[in-house]
Image (cartoon, rainbow, N blue to C red; front, side, top):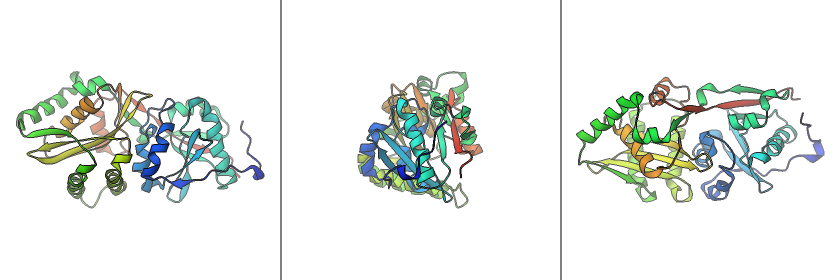
Length: 315
């Protein structure tokens, strides 16, 4: 059982809002231990920085600590560090919440590997609850690049239909910061097509994409698009976790009226940008039935499960 620090030994962490300039120095702390969630790469923290009011602090030059907020309640995330250092920095944040914030410790989206390594399910001090709607979908890299197997036959048919109908009219292209104007124009039209009654996170996602495009030269991302008749009709953004040999697909937007376009950009992005990725993480479905159906239709090989970790008996 861990022992709370005394009041005169408060944890000294200097938290600051995450900015694009910080990604370069934060990146080396990521992908240093087992973690198959989309949060295992740096871009997700930047993408959702406004939604969760993301702040970070570097502790001892060995770990990144997180401070976030949702609905006025502060919470944290698992430290980014070497696996053997995880217990030390996990309890450092417990003490920070208790002695500095005078609040019970809480983590959202704790990865399963960390929960198991820290033996949190067995602890008397913490409650561990799976966040079922927030698990990430994992896929076999070779299967997704080839759309092989009977269960993906319909996807292959959609892809072949696209190739036939738009033969000579489409172009897959790697995108750069210089293409941001075209991406913004496409994104604005895509957002308009969703209408006014949409999920609450959508505008934050769009703002996050704009921030990525404004700073893409400073971020560790891969970005591609599909042009039809010279006009951008789809784009996608991904990152790579070398520890897990895993591609993380953060963003994928396409003109839904063009049959097979989603299948085409999905496959081509993996073929060209992540040819050696063993695993593909396509993030969660946020509990939305439409997203869940779409992600399940690709026959996931597994899930990266996430947990709420909440301190018991505080105060």
